[in-house]
Length: 260
Length: 255
Image (cartoon, rainbow over all chains, first blue to last red):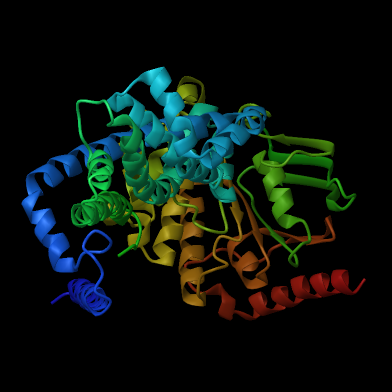
């Protein structure tokens, strides 16, 4: 067995043991303090509720995954484009970068109602809100990556009379790709959070129902077991997106580095 | 082609703090000469090389190199201290890079039109044709440096600048790559300026040695040791000339 495969199996077993122990502790706690189901159901009740609503949960998870993935893709394209503009002009970078930081600090729950007024109870509104949340790590990392080329590489391009476009496309952009992929990894987690928070608001009147909408509905009905099941699914969606981005990163970087 | 590949008059580079990296240097490098510049770290030898390459501007004085003006560096190649290969490009694509960058000037520079063929020929000269499809991280340190030499050769330069190219390699590899450089010079007859702090390397690879100290050339010596495929380092003449260069360097430092 390859060492990598063995390590992965050991990691999975370790994570599973922690999950089983935490579940057992949770179960014992609920029984010991005789907590009502509406306040905190046992893990088995959560699993049961999730199984009963598996159709709804599966469909909503797909919607949330789709929203997060599309938003992440838009953030990658938009963020990279912004970073390229920043890399070409120090003045533009100074003028615009504070606004990107502003996007990072603005609470999405505060601007979500505004976005709904402007864009309606639409899928695109959820995407806009999610892009706002996951844009910053992309812009920040790609901007850093575009400026990270080594001195001797820059000298090489100068020596051979490279144009600005040649330097950008053949040196700066390839140098920035690992930075972009790291930023995308951070943003993948944020994208799921963003998608669910956006769905809290947007799904209210929309035709599609994501995990955020299910959570709002089940919270209103005090169906705590189903609510926790939806929470579990949202974690799974987050892990899936993160794993997808990380897989892409490894495939890409493995081509020309010694990354395992 | 003029008689001198490089002509420097009172060349000075002064940094904003007032320190002079090179100070009123006069230097003529005849075409096809192999010049080695030796000196301690920080003596200005790398700055001098960067000035010749057009990577560093003079704050005073004049520079003229054969075949190029400030906007036309057609015939210069540079081998850096590190191989400086682009890790995302395969070996062959690293070697074609200078041709790609100069493609827009090709009509003027008369560079080889078939990039791939030219790159394979350059790789063959450094005996690395069989690794053309590998990525740099799959090569040893010595192989990377040979690829970097192939990249410098692919434009068929008239002036080859080498900035301590073998500093990071072990002695055996240094000697092997030194022999390779001499072999390439014998084939192409380019003018060569080598910067090194290694006196033995300077003697083995050059026919003229300039000793630099504090931004100035303090000794200009003709190297009596002829390049040879056999190890010239074991001859008494080599030891004697080593002593001469070493004495000049020591005298400069002590003064």
